[in-house]
Image (cartoon, rainbow, N blue to C red; front, top):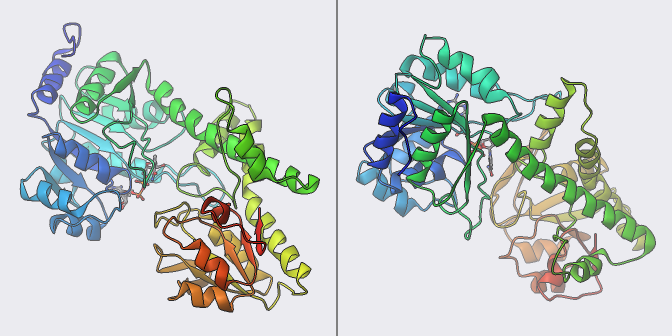
Length: 444
Ligand SMILES: NC(=O)c1ccc[n+]([C@@H]2O[C@H](COP(=O)([O-])OP(=O)(O)OC[C@H]3O[C@@H](n4cnc5c(N)ncnc54)[C@H](O)[C@@H]3O)[C@@H](O)[C@H]2O)c1
């Protein structure tokens, strides 16, 4: 039980509604982050209303069907049947909720600047249904200051005061799609409010569904925590990517170096090189931070350098493939290539920011004939070209001048691919990891 004696009455009532599971909650944006969150809260016994502008998602949920790999349809169906989970395209459905989490996208604009338009339109659409005692939690990754600078004035524009009448907090989402051991329920949840009452209210809402809450003193600390986590990954991936470039120059096997370094029981954390960063988070989030720093005349050098190294990896992969073909008397121009795996990481279907898109685009621009196989991605479209996954991996591997592993899905039979292919470039060390050591495989 939270010690609420010093909190304003509206916060005390709200916390009690969470603690007694009488609260109704909303989730705005039912994507990779929002749907698992909505399901976790509904599973905890709260009545959850999901709102998404995408009518097809809302219709799927109404039919009791999941469209996110990590969320089983059986679970959605049972929560919809019991009335714990409903979905709507209308913000009116949020009129009677006690707390609402905003999980809308935060992409970059073409210019590389943060695009907060989804957050802004969500909070503006929410304004008419804000009522005394309501809590709003922003989950979308963004730069430090967004909750206070953008959401707070919008929420207070109707005359209610955040901290006494309304409650506002930031809580970073840490979901790692495809992961089974760390889930929405057991991953510690950081919450930071605009006031201590806001933090307490957000902690109470998430305590209903999550095992461990980590309260921090401000929304900015919570916002910055997420950016530290993802910048840490981006910088370390850049470091190991550069290590791969250096090892290649020196004729040293970077994969063996990493395996050896990983035996150190302390002070080292394993990262592996690859064809570039992908997904909605790691390539983008650090750039939110560096953009914000520009406004205080500070250059985030580590972020910019990491971004430069990681962004260049698809080009490096293409150069290595070109060299490999050249070594076998073939030109890249006119070669027939099979890209194996196009999702941004293993065992998911998410294509967002996938380096495969850049690798394929660059190979095509150099005149190669490119096909791909991915058990999770039936078709893809990017910058004026479209492809569909070849139906028969082994036949396509046999026909290709070179197979290029961009994403190492675990369901691929790498031994069979090695038998069929004449030349392989493996940017993920997938063959060796599967125990396949074949001289026709060249590694990044
Ligand atoms: N995907 C991840 O692994 C991950 C992990 C941590 C954090 N995040 C962050 O979480 C946020 C959401 O990411 P996601 O991957 O769930 O995105 P997503 O694209 O899968 O889902 C976002 C949903 O929001 C809906 N939407 C957009 N504008 C809306 C509006 N105004 N009102 C209602 N619905 C609206 C979209 O239709 C979509 O269904 C982003 O800020 C992202 O950076 C994502």
